[in-house]
Image (cartoon, rainbow, N blue to C red; front, side, top):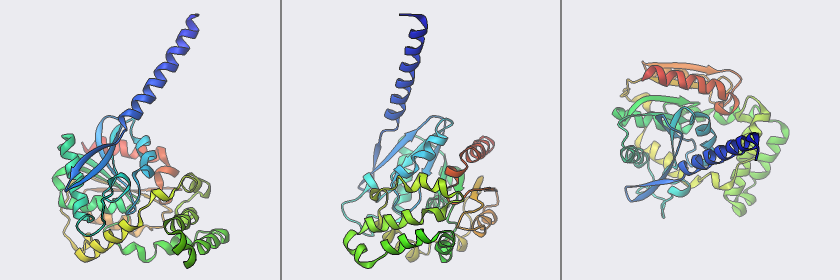
Length: 310
């Protein structure tokens, strides 16, 4: 066997082992938190970043691409939030699903991993949840990264859907109407709602073509709509409106927000005023999923921010 062939085989073997090691490292781990097994995965090595996905009710698989973007530089801890996917209780009610229990889950994972403080990155609803976590557990958070966050409260829902609809074409709207038919919703349940989300996805993006990266891989199992009902009820009943609460976190905050995000510009601006030690960066030519539309810009800003804030 020639030297060049040996070299090629060595490279192939190294690549195979690297991929295998990565996959094994990202296998699910679990921790028992208040009687529920809560699952999480770890991607990469380096300074720890807790990744809090959106929804509420999104399966953690929807955020693997974000972890893959960051994992060459950071240890990303991606949580399957309470009530989602593998972290689902036998019964959904106020004793098994709440914001407080979810925050305690994060703390239990942090303690199990032996992490004194971690960077916390929240996307969309996860951005709001990250802010709530930093409010109640400020000593656990070394820095806060809010990516296309829904903000300090649920106020943006007054116009969020309208902004999405304004970007859709006629075919998108016809599909939404089709899947919103009461008979289909009754007969097909979550599948009909998932198809409606798929039809709405172009309205979340600056670049319609890039919306296909999300919409073409959406599955019914990606969403748990029952969870959302309990979480929104809990937020309203407890009046978890940070705008009406004194800021309890004074660490560094990075606010990354797509310029064309249907959430609008007032939400990140309010976040920037709320957090005195914050930096607001608008990501040009990006909608709600800014890390999908502008991955290099997102990665560069996060690397620089975490480096400076430590």
